[in-house]
Every structure is written in structure tokens, then in C-alpha cells.
Image (cartoon, rainbow, N blue to C red; front, side, top):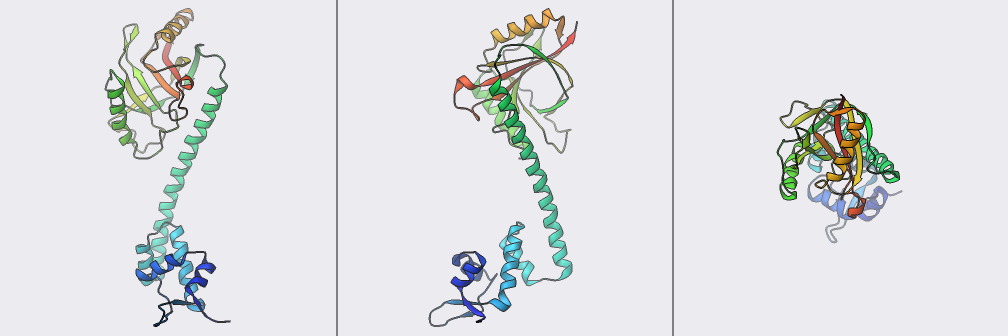
Length: 273
């Protein structure tokens, strides 16, 4: 069996394109064993070059750049190889954690959306005991959608790509409790599920407690009717307001383009009178 094969044959054997092999040649990563001086055709040795090409492809799967791979192949020794492989293992471990976080976010979102989709009774108050939560909020009150959107964009920069907000129910707003009423201005917030530093300037803590909750279809600004329903429920059950109102967009524009499908949850912390 012949040892020298054409670039086309090698490309088929290793499931790569001939252009990829030409690029490897141009950058000095993987040169052909022989180049026909008349035709310029590239030929490769199965015996001596197959292992190097296989190593290149495997290192690419580890996320190494072609520059890193070239350095690895040209200066290989046991110590250096182990050092590089250990570094790549650490990077892979971090990616695995991020993917696990992303999987959890998407799974939670699917579960929540399916529950809400099956919900029959809206505007029906209930009491929920909710564990402590961490949010990102700069505390700035907004009077309109333009200012609200601007502040949300500023806050999203603090997430550092730890987990997406798109297609999740992590976005909401806060209305400050002022006496026995809630402010008409909205403070944007984002629930932070995965954080490395809970002492960040804009990280805030929502303590565990009982919340009077209500789901409704509509927008985040007009909630007079829903607040009246919750206020009546709170009074009838001998409860009292214990903090600011939270509005969470459970189904928003990232899930549906129809305004009739938008679902928002109101949460008011309460104590027994």
C-alpha cells in the first residue's frame, strides 16, 4: 500500500476540507511531505503525518487556537504538554459549570412557562413563602419606558455573561412602599442566580418571607385594579404590608410577541397584623 497520498485523499480520510489543509500549510502548522514542483499538488505521508494531523484536530476540540497548537507541536515535551493539558482542563471545567448554569436557567424557565400557560385563574391572590433572593439593582426610579430600558441596559453589563436574561423570568421592577401606597415610579431589577461576589455595589438582598402574590395579564405600569384586589385580600386576612412591591415578568416579549400573552406576577411582602 502506498504511503504518499494526495491532499484530497487525506482530507476525505480525516474528514476535513482541502482548504483547511492548505491553510495549515500556509501558517506552517502542517506541511505536506511532498509538493509536486510542476503541478503544485500537495502530498502527505500516512506513516509519518497522520498522527500529527490527528493531534491537531484533537487539540482544536479542546478549544486551543491554531497558534497555540503550532507552539505545542513544535516544542513538545512531557512537562510542557502536561502543563498545557492541565490548563485546558481548568478552562473546560469552567465551561462545564457555565453550561450547567445555563441548563438550569433554561429548565427552570420551561417549567415556569408551562405552569403559567396552564394557569386558569388570574387575578386570584395567594400567599407564597419565598426563600431569600439576590438581585441586581441600581435603585434608580424610572418614570417612563425609555428611562427604564436605559437603566436595564446599564445593569445587564454587571451580569458578566454568567447567565442570560433573555427567555427567563429574571427581570422585574420594584415599587417603593410609601405609607400605605406604592410609588408609580419603577426601579428595574434582575434576579442574579449565579454570582461570584455577593458584595457587589448593585447587589441587593431580598430576605425570605411571606408574600401576597397575584398573576395578571397586562403591562407593568397599569396595576390599579390588581393592587385593589391584593389590598382587599391582605386586609381580609389580617395581614399588613412589610416592604416594597415586586413585579416579575413571568412571560414577556422574549417568549411571545403578543401583548395578550404577557404575564406579570405581583409580590408584596406581608406580616401578620
